[in-house]
Image 1: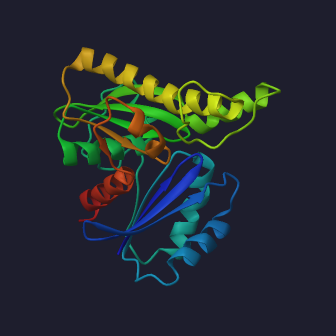
Image 2: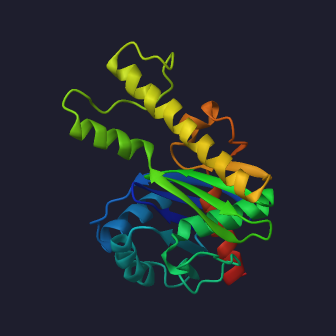
Length: 252
């Protein structure tokens, strides 16, 4: 079985593949100061009752975690092929930006997975710590995109800076016109971010022309997709699928 690991700023997502099929996944909190030994215990605990791992592929947007993971993987997974997605790794995705090395590995594997599944041009909207809109050409190239503060981090900043506001559960309110503070915050988060995404997607389409799909992924995608007028598909495991594809390109 292949273990795919996506280390994000807020959460780390792990998935087990048998061939092309994702058979199990987990979402755990990313701890930027965790040691390699602590992460090894977490991995082994999750995998304890699972079939034997025959390969591992990983991407990380947190440098401190990746620094700890490298020796951990060498110690605990040295008997299987391991692929870390970073500059120099074969992905098959041309990166047409000013500085390709600064593009997050998760955005590249999302590009690969989206193009393989939906063709192109298409747009990937990743709802995570930041909200990423990534533009994929008809040939599967990464063209660039837009980055905005994510839903959770925006609400956290608001509650930290505004004395009478607090962090609320991100769910759809009964109306866009909030009748209390909680509903007003939820309206701004859910309907506001849906409008932000729609506005950016419309501007991107004005520039590149019609797209085959607008694909939502990420932990908070399910909150927004029902209110968006431009999102056409939801794939919560897009990054894991892209990681599997990268592994196959590098190991076979």
